[in-house]
Picture 1 (spheres, helix red, strand yellow):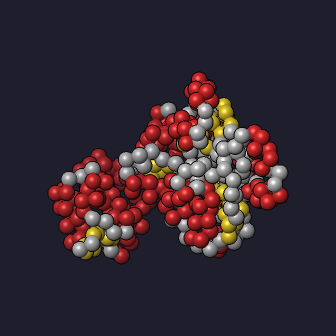
Picture 2 (cartoon, rainbow, N blue to C red):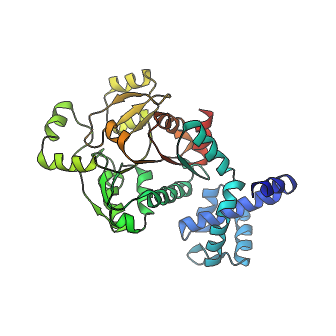
Picture 3 (cartoon, one colour):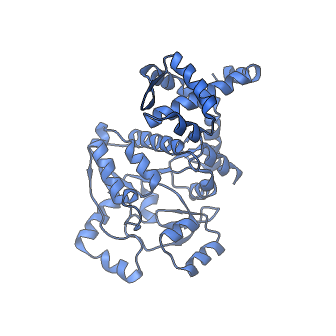
Length: 339
């Protein structure tokens, strides 16, 4: 298939551009379920006039249905999108990107979705869908699944569906709360994943960022100690990746520590640890939940993160070397390779 696409790119480059544009329109509408023309044009950075012409063509082909409340993909359109998936990965160069990142960072499996999560909410939704697909694929019966917090993890949770293995799984938060939006707390995401899949869940009702004295006191509480023991038995960990400086501010870390992180070259934060460009841990915070030694023993570690702004951060965590699956987007993937 790759050789045929290479020939088409040389002989019919305009055709490939049109195919990519129409596939992107269909995919964005499918992800949204129902969307208005103006909203879609804005998200695709396309004029309404150009979009109207493409939409009229797709409707005439029976791929779109247009109602007064918006557009949606028809059943024929959904079948076409599914059939095109393998070809599109070659067409967009995603398969090649995945191969390059897998080789460069020694990750077992890499999944790249088109677009940039920084600029397109549709890409972030696609990132969540792809992350959820990997969770379904990697789950095993009766396993404990630990999940971190964040907006990307929330998208993963929204796209999970029941499978026999997930129904038999126990979802737990990988760490305590950050004091941010309730929707993005690890506790909320763990419970959402359980409800979406028919699984069970346990919660950890403690803040994540604690002083040393408070931390040592809390982990001696019988109930806290018991749930931490369950969390540390996790077979699978699903986590996001943050930029070090932004995460330090979200955690309300003092200015002196933030300056120290900058001096140490911290680029990324994941599960309470800060990493430099070589994947070396340069700082950690006392956190209730999974420790680094637990993560190193976890059977399946899935990172889901995207956006051009996070490319160097994702690269730093991948160099740490304990992620088995990376789900990212096109913009972040290119930035990782540049980094």
